Image (tube, rainbow, N blue to C red; front, side):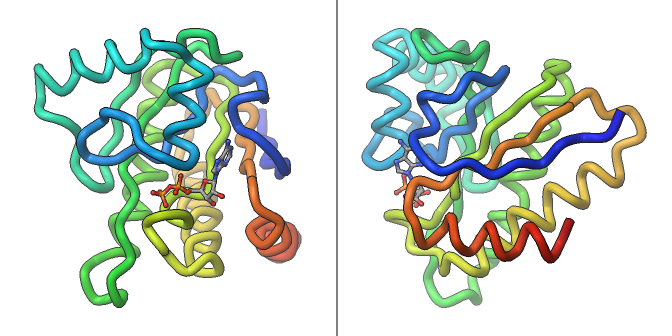
Length: 177
Ligand code: ADP
């Protein structure tokens, strides 16, 4: 079965999927933006689970991903990945952002998930240029899908909260796919 890549505008916490991806930070203790929205909607169990991971492995490095249950969210899991903070592009920011998508999809495969939703990782407080972040997101997902010969995922949703990202994704998705 081939995977469906779709685009939605709005709040990622409202869309039912097997796993919601969180643009977390290395502390895993929650924050603003989408991270804050996910923690608020999930309830305190999410923070408790994140603290357990922190105690075990000391947070999560940039580009890496970990997963927890999803509390009150309409999902089975939250996959927390830490995007790269944009400096000037010479600090491995692109590769690290690519790693986020790849490592998250690896976890989704391991968990045998059928659907997953991604926010626009790094394009808020982490100030990654939106065009480049979208290109990396779409290319990384595309590469992963093409390289997997036993893909369980059936739907990957890109969720854009702001109009600017939505327009960028709309344009790029019609070009890349
Ligand atoms: P980062 O620290 O990785 O930049 P942010 O949460 O600051 O993370 O921003 C990442 C993206 O998440 C931004 O494009 C922002 O518009 C978007 N965002 C914020 N709230 C939500 C939400 N509830 N659902 C989906 N996306 C959101």
